[in-house]
Length: 294
Image (tube, rainbow, N blue to C red; front, side, top):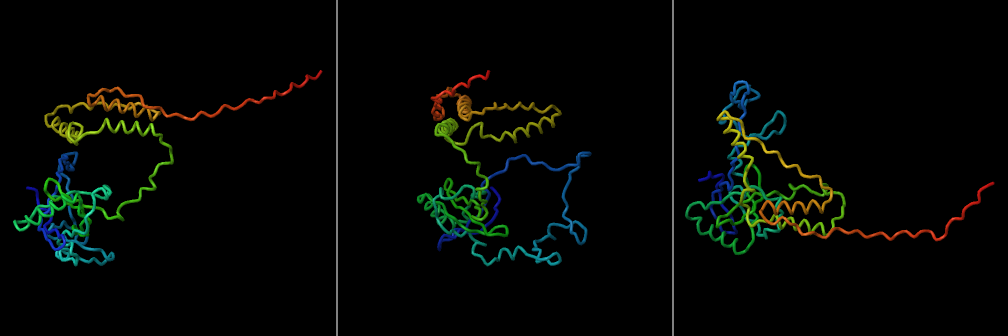
């Protein structure tokens, strides 16, 4: 059973749903520590009080806001739990919107919301079914870790999921990153669509969606444990320098089909045509030859 991160309630009008919040994801990455290379002694960070010049225990550490260099305002956990905000103790649903109306760049980490105790079962299921029938998602506010946040509530396999969201002013304007003005032909777009079709899958499963980096790290660790050479690193295939965009697209389609065991033959796509400029007319009159001087 995953650890409870936060306990509170979902506020849906006058309906309250007591819930526990647990992480919806797991980190399977291999974690490293820092060691002294000379003797492999563990290197650790110590929390030291600058005034007393001594290491302090976690129980002696609290939060504070630096008003000036010489004045710090202490803030306790009790202060944060008693904030004058309705979202300090509840996830307040503010509105319901179509999922496609939300820019994915604003959607962050996901958490499962677990009904807390038997009393929450019926209102929890009510919200699940209502969201499912509406084909919409809920936008909510909640306060965690010292700040009020925006969130998105949706349903996954009959379980409520809360995604953290960024506020509108936290999204940078990408206008400055736009490329220079260029012309892209319809035939090039058609070729890109053909490449997309050749890379389309029904679900994100299979060998290509495996964490090969973590597997490679595990192989290195196992080889060193057994005092043998790590597996050889395959040489990456160097892509050919293709200047012609259409040729690059066609070769990509061919490779994508071949990797899936399909017929690698690519139907010739219409090449980009350019309008021929009319030939310049030659002058009708010939220049008269000058007589040679005697």
